[in-house]
Image 1 (cartoon, protein in one colour):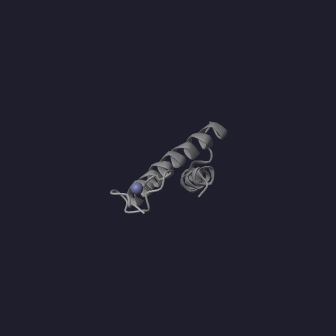
Image 2 (cartoon, rainbow, N blue to C red):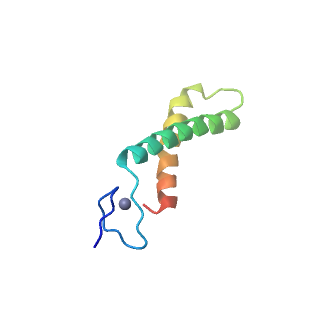
Image 3 (cartoon, rainbow, N blue to C red):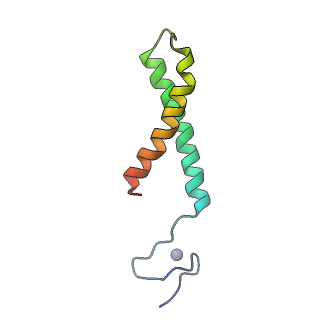
Length: 77
Ligand SMILES: [Zn+2]
């Protein structure tokens, strides 16, 4: 069986090179940042007066954890 010149995997008709770990990790970081920012926006919308200022880090962390996890679920991994 032929091997793929790019990823060295078996070159079947349906072959697609798996994305590199670096790009997957970079995407997770980007998703985490986006999720964190989304968490802050949700917090700001839910608490317009800013009474829950000490929730910022929690909101950022929750978004940063949830969004990449959800994206991974949608991608089926
Ligand atoms: Zn390949």
